[in-house]
Image (tube, one colour):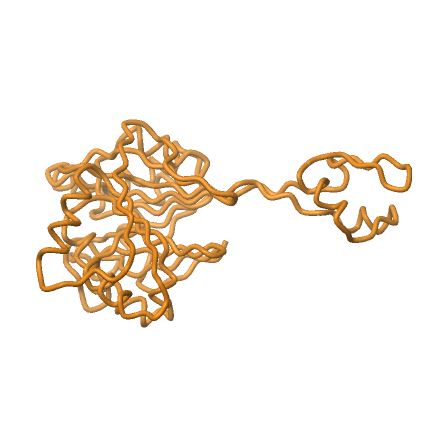
Length: 299
């Protein structure tokens, strides 16, 4: 699993930072959290193939989070292979996507499945064999969602146990991997002895919002919380006026949610560097990092 930050600025891009976009790659899926202006160029620089995107999760429909969608979709239409993308977003996502596709001369050459997610409280909206996606409504000036990627627990065969008990590789291991006990050469083999359960990892993405209980619940026990921090806490009034979070608010969410690591992003252009924001957050949560464009995190 790898996470790449494609844009870490707030509403306005700077020389060093593009607007919102985070890419998560996992097995055959590429999940793009928001798609601000210039995202596909950022993908070029980061070495991400555009056709690696399988899902786009839109937090909300302010321009700095969605203005790159039409360019990305148009480029994907030039691929030789058939492209299928699922696009998830809050209420009225279908309407806004229709507006985007009508905004210029445009031929939709890929298959885009649009799903509106309603989640007054954190709830699952997607599941496959390997992971679950959850969403919850945030407290912003427009409908806005936070998202969690939750990897399912994995069962790995304990090879040392197999060697000690003379158990060879073979189809009988499938049952053990599924948690079933087996009988091998007349001996009972317990799955709990032969298999190690590897806990799944959880990534939570929280953008434009005030401090709210849904953000805490959505991020509960996350390995990594990616959270906006537009201002430091000395601009709390401005944050409340525009319904954004400060570094203190983000750190308090991380603290109360019991997350392992907090990565701050979506910074106001007023900050030439993020030292003030990071120091402010560390007053309330120890394991904090301020993201930069093209930063990669491997989990």
